[in-house]
Image (cartoon, rainbow, N blue to C red; front, side, top):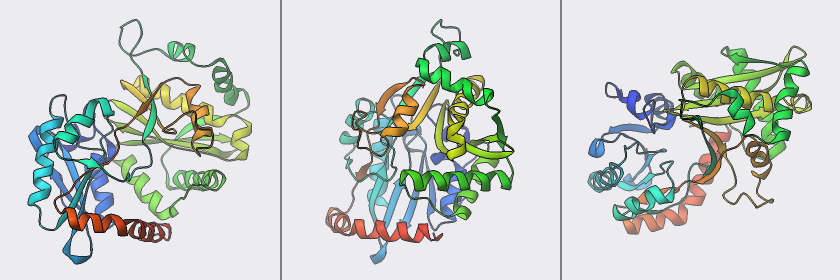
Length: 342
């Protein structure tokens, strides 16, 4: 595996605007699955690029949720990434998908020659809540957070403790297994695909040990009934996974878990709480994410749309052929992953 440059995670993962998917831990996870990690510093920014070999000597490049760039760096960083793709042997495409709005990133992407491409990450919209105190005295207090919520949400947050739910931090392999069982149940109920237990255990354990993620579990009648995992992305806390079984739903465990995650984010000094995926159009009741959106929006936050994935294409003809074949290639990867492969 390729080692990260000294101090990489301090900026790319833990610094302002950082992201777990730009960390050396994430690179290690993907290298175990056959990708090759490349650590770049275009125009002083940070860009972890993952390369995958394709048939015909071609290579697929992906900078997940990057590059991580300070204000004023993004345009030049994207230009240098595009130039790097052109100079890389066999590079078919270099894809980026920074968690930035179109107002912030669309013009720099266009000026650097990137074009809108298929999304890899399923989340293209979210709810963001500022944790800055409205009084201007640092982070907001728990009381201020609660006061901004819907009345029904405040009521639901109080129910888990009243009904005997305990919330605790999960650290052991048994905790990870319990969370996977809950996540698999939630996946079947909601209709989304989950990977194998061994895959999630490897990812979750790696990120927890790197200090980039925290697992919370809710117990009732001496067994876990709900769980959530937050990622620590620089100055932003990201509610990445949530899961609950029928017993957990009856005691409002998910409300207690999300509230604990928000309170802990405030205490660790996070500037923003990110509730994770919501529908691109929140008014679309047919969207599978509409139910989770209704749950999350009661806690507050502003609907935010990311600019989405964009591609730099050094080989346009080959890229067009790849775009035709890409759905079959992606489907094959999904089947392999579902079976536990790389």
